[in-house]
Length: 110
Image (cartoon, rainbow, N blue to C red; front, side, top):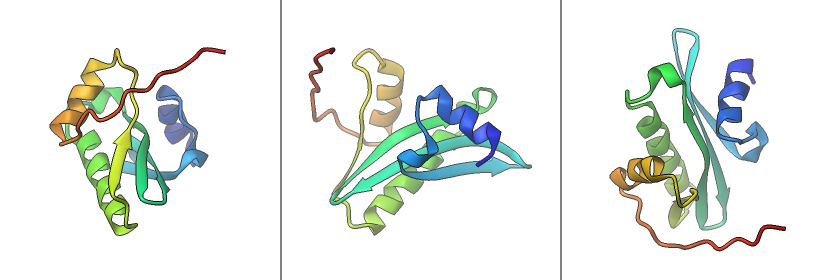
């Protein structure tokens, strides 16, 4: 895995061994990285990040659509993403791709 991929994954707090790593490359430059985890009938977007200088160009959308296709091929019934409640921008991005708010997570800090 390239240092650029590791660096981008670090921006979203995800390691490459968290699932299937999808990479968008153009002219030998990594533009975006997504990590998909498949577990039975569920799939999860574990991480998604675009190179800051290439945001708002459809790269994230391309990665999510590929994750969706892979999840369907694996027989999954849903593709899920977990976000902090305060991350309205990212939630809006996923809603625009057809994701629905379906769960509330409650955490206890230890």
